[in-house]
Length: 118
Image 1: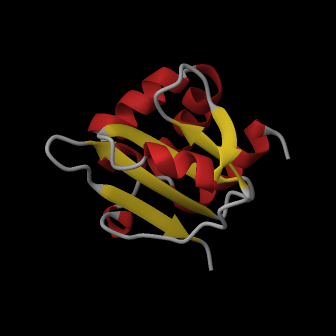
Image 2: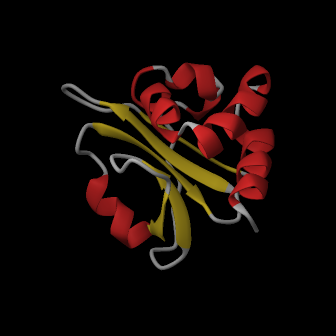
């Protein structure tokens, strides 16, 4: 599945309806702008029902990460888990677009947002 397809499926499943199209655009064309939203304005992206939740990822499955790097990064959960809790803000989407984990930029503590399609 291409990034565009993954982001569109993800947005449809998890992102606030009024932000879905913008999410896909920023994910593809302006990942730094999307990362800024993840860090400081998560409520623009996700419904509040995902706030404070958590999900389990298979450590070896591929996922897509919006984090500290300039571009979208493809990695595994076991590799990205080293970046969690560092206060920098991150969004991790599994490659099937069926679950996500996100942290706001934190000082002193990040706020976790997560969800999974049933």
